[in-house]
Structures are given as C-alpha cells and as structure tokens.
Image 1 (spheres, rainbow, N blue to C red):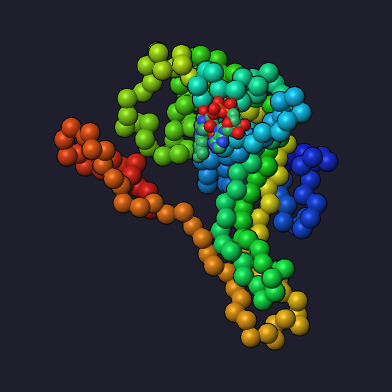
Image 2: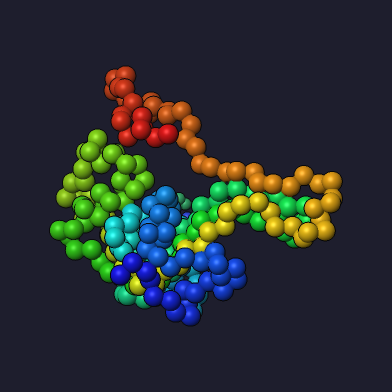
Amino acid sequence: MNNYSKSTRNTVKRSAKRGYYDKETVYQILDAGYICHVGFTIDGQPYVIPQAYGREGDTIYLHGAVGNRMLKQLEKGIPVCVTVTHTDGIVLARSAMHHSFNYRSAVLFGTAHLVPDEQKEHALFVITEQIMPGRWGEVRTPNVQELKATKVLAMEIAEASAKIRTGPPKDDEADHELPIWAGVLPLQITSGEAIPDPDLRSKLPLPNSILQVK
Ligand SMILES: Cc1cc2nc3c(=O)[nH]c(=O)nc-3n(C[C@H](O)[C@H](O)[C@H](O)COP(=O)(O)OP(=O)(O)OC[C@H]3O[C@@H](n4cnc5c(N)ncnc54)[C@H](O)[C@@H]3O)c2cc1C
C-alpha cells in the first residue's frame, strides 16, 4: 500500500490541501532529517523528547541507554507520536498576521517494540547512516559490551501525515498596495568546516562521509 490510511488522528484539518498521506512524501521528509521529537504520556503527563532516528521502510529506529526512561515506557507498547520538521523559509508578508513558514513536516503514529539482540547492530547502522551517510563503514563497529548497554526500539508507522507549505506570502489583495517589502527568506542547514579532534594521533585526511556532505 502506497498511502497511509486516514483517521481522525492523522487527517490534516487546517489548510487541508497541504496535507499528504502517500508514503513517498512522508519518506522524503523523514529521510531529509535525523532528529525527531517523540511524544508519549506517562501517568497522564505528556512528554516530548528530542531523539536521533533512522528510517527503514515503515520502521523508525530509536536508541539510547538501557536505563532511558522514554525507551522503557515505549517498550511497553504505549501509543507514540513522532514528528520531524524542516523549516525551508520564513514567509514575510505585508501584514503581521499573514507571516508564515515554508516547511515540510511529518507526524507519525504507532507503537514501538524492542529490537532483538541479533538485529540491534543493523538498527544502529540505519540510525548512523541516516545522520552521516557512509560513516558506519569508516568506524569501529560496536562491541558486545556497547551493544549490551544500548537499547534499540523499532516503531512501526501505523498512520502518518505530511504537511508542506511552499511559495510566497498570501496577503490580502488590498495590502498589495502597501509600500512594505514582502517575500520569502529561504533557510537551509549548512555544515561548517570540519574541526579535527585534538586527540587525533596523526594528521588524517577528511573521511569520505564528510567530503560528500555538500
Ligand atoms: C538533537 C538531539 C538528539 C538526541 N538523540 C538522542 C538519542 O538518539 N538517544 C538518546 O538516548 N538520547 C538522545 N538525546 C537526548 C535525549 O533528548 C534525552 O535527554 C535522553 O534520551 C534521556 O534523558 P533522560 O533519561 O535524562 O531523560 P528523561 O528521564 O526521559 O527525562 C527527564 C526530564 O529531563 C528533561 N530532559 C530530558 N531530555 C531533555 C532534553 N533533550 N532537553 C531538555 N530537557 C530534557 C525533561 O524535563 C524530562 O522530562 C538527544 C538530544 C538531542 C537534543
């Protein structure tokens, strides 16, 4: 199935035409990021915690220390909501009220389960590659102790929506006459120059994973 089913919890209501439910659009937004916000409740108290993630198909991998409270809760199979947001621009309108963002965001619903030991390393590979493609092949892979100290969960996406805004401001027609600059200030994440660890034992060249970052 190429679309997520629509329900009361994942149907975009405001600016509904900006809502998408096809997996291709949701995957593109997820694959363009590596930080999500994980929402869950414990005893009626909502928490939203930032986390790294990796996507593979409809699975979102999360990892942390074995004692991590969030992972302990999610492992029980409680409802989880994961969001990923990219801000592509600040939309500057002539009127204060029509200011906006150009953005791409995805909201995912599902439940998570513990990744069995034999699949843990693969899940960590997926997370690492999502953050820094090619890095896994350049580094020492986890040893038995490190794997033991790490919990990995897999959240299966049961329902999802994407919401995307693009384009210029949408001012009231009458405001177009105002002598006020309007338009879009594009935003993007860029990397700076790589800073070598002072503990590097020799002058090593930059790895391919860094060289291929645009
Ligand atoms: C960009 C980013 C990526 C991260 N990736 C991971 C990851 O992949 N795996 C991982 O285990 N952790 C990650 N963290 C850290 C994560 O957000 C939590 O801090 C951590 O998972 C658990 O902390 P804890 O057990 O102390 O918190 P909990 O016991 O879950 O939280 C206790 C309280 O501490 C406070 N708190 C916890 N975390 C934060 C926070 N980040 N900022 C402000 N207050 C906080 C909140 O008030 C929370 O209610 C990431 C953080 C950031 C910002």
